[in-house]
Image (cartoon, rainbow, N blue to C red; front, side):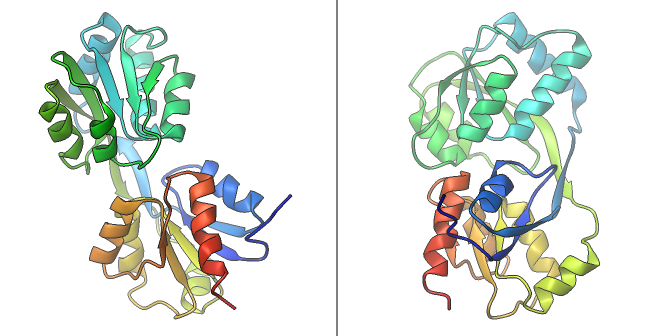
Length: 254
C-alpha cells in the first residue's frame, strides 16, 4: 500500500473525537497528533432546534440542508430527546460532502444531493434545484449567510436554525506546543476557519519549516485573514483531498 506521508509529523485540528481525516493521514503513513482547537457545544436556542426537528418529522420541509456532521448529530440528539425519529422522515437531504452525507444516512435520513466538487455552503446552494417549498438549513453559530442567500436566490423559503455552537477548545497540550514551536512538526492541517483563528492566536510565530494546509477554500481564506501562510488547500474536504494536498507539498520539501 502506498504511504506517501511516511514519517511526516502532522498536527490535525479536530473539534471532537478524531475522525476520517485523521484516519486518512495515519493510513498514509503520517504520525498524527490531534489539537482540539475548537469544541462543539449545544445550541443557545434549544427550543428553536426542537421545533425544527418536529417540523422535519412532520414533513414540513421539502429539503434539509446540512454542512457538517455536527449539525446532523445535533438534530439526531434533539430528536432522541423529543422521542421522535428522523429515520424515514419525509424530507430530502442536501449534504455538503461525503462525511456529512454518511452521518445523515446513519441517522436514517435520505441523502438526495451532494455536490461532486467543492465542499462549501455556496457549492451546496449552487447545486440545489430551483423550487418554491421550505428548506431547513441546520447550521452552527459561526455560519455565514451564503447557504441561506443561495437557496433563497433559487426560489426556496429558508428557515435557518442554530443546531450547535463552535467554541474555543481546551488548553493545548504543553508537549504539542513545544513540538510546534521548536520545529518538531512538519505540517498542520486546519479543518475550519475557527480552528485557523485559534491556531494563529496560539502560535503568532511559526518555524519556517512548518507548512499549513487548509481543508477547503473557506478555511484557507480565514487562515490567511488570521495571519497564517497557507501552503496548500485540499481540492476536496476528504481524507484523499487532504493527503493529496500534503503530498504535493512534500514533493518540494527536502
